[in-house]
Length: 288
Ligand code: ARG
Image (cartoon, rainbow, N blue to C red; front, side):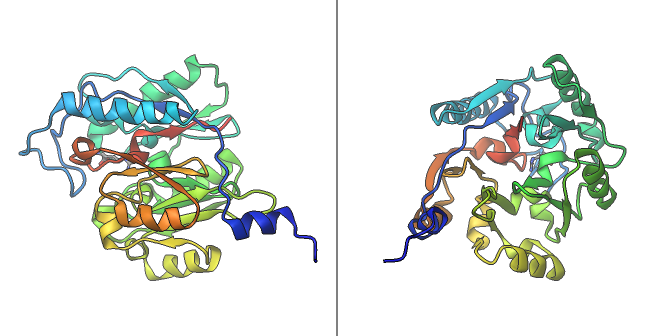
């Protein structure tokens, strides 16, 4: 019998290994839909702040149950979208690249997060000069950042992120206004390691023809999502490499991920979805 490399064994068994994460989250104490800056937001529809808080608390506690660390930033009155922490920073190797929002309503959020990082001992905090909605449009694969543009983050912000963070940044074009941030159309299931390439899930229709070809070339083993997966924010998932936190409605995607060795963990985000957000939007990952 031929000796099998551990990597081959892992691959053939689809053994998924969770890595402990550190997240920054912001309670939706001042949650509201007072303005519409994406097609999901309808200010004429009521929102229930109590329910948003309960759903968010459950999401935070889910991460803690999975063994992750969750830090909290103080929410600010008048900044209803501040709950979407992912938009306010990209942290790789302890280097922080802050945000610069496109919508005037969200502009002040960036400075609250900048100050949080400074107050928590981060020395290397740089604010971008271009529109940059951080992890809303940036996904770290372990090797590079996949970066979205088309609706929010400027393409020039991709080059700026590469220069400031010192990691390769690959630009992808989003074409469907419902999937206005990269993290509504793509997420990383497991990061690249020495022995395995990164594994991602994405919704091809959200991307331009060229970007779709780039994704197919780079990630031939990707999990491809369909319209139903995308519409319930199934691509706004958060994976630790094994456990994948998904909206409760994303049952089709969950089944396919389970078939590939992942452990789906459901979160009810119905209230937060009224602002166009899901689990990932609420979750900024701090990579030491
Ligand atoms: N209402 C927010 C906006 O349109 C939602 C942000 C969702 N965040 C995300 N990472 N996709 O900016």
